[in-house]
Image (cartoon, rainbow, N blue to C red):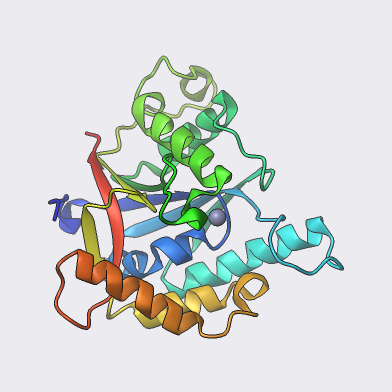
Length: 242
Ligand SMILES: [Zn+2]
């Protein structure tokens, strides 16, 4: 297993995702461990998830409001109270310079030591992990970590007009990577991950056996990570970005 920065060296973590519920499928058990350890965690969500759900009687504007509320409730389950929604169109996110600037702005505002972001690579083994919005946000977010957030000459208005000083993120954790190399034991926080996913009623309300599905998925990850029998794990690919 890849060695990572000690959590004692980490004060703030920024989790960047494409949609409401992404963080809860991929990383909520790990987030709960971090907030339990006194680390401040902030969520930045590129879209409001208005293309989700299956009820055609709900307007897409109402769906966006609903899903922002669901993500806010889910975040509370794992100790996160600071959420920033960027309002990009669900299903049509591209890794543009505008998205890079928006993400670099949030990184400079939050000043995280560690950033969690989606994989820009397609994972052929898990098609759901490779939603085009995930890949676009993953690519733009890693570009925002390096070079944009740390380079004073990248998006110069951030410094000149908004007084946002450059910031270097020390470590990136990629969720949904085809090549995970770090596994976090989330056995103790698993009930809060389940509760967080349950808060996304418009997405998970119809799923029978969600907890069992998650238990199977996370126990296979724990096995791949070499954890003892009966443990549950979330998997990441960790990059040294210092
Ligand atoms: Zn998603």
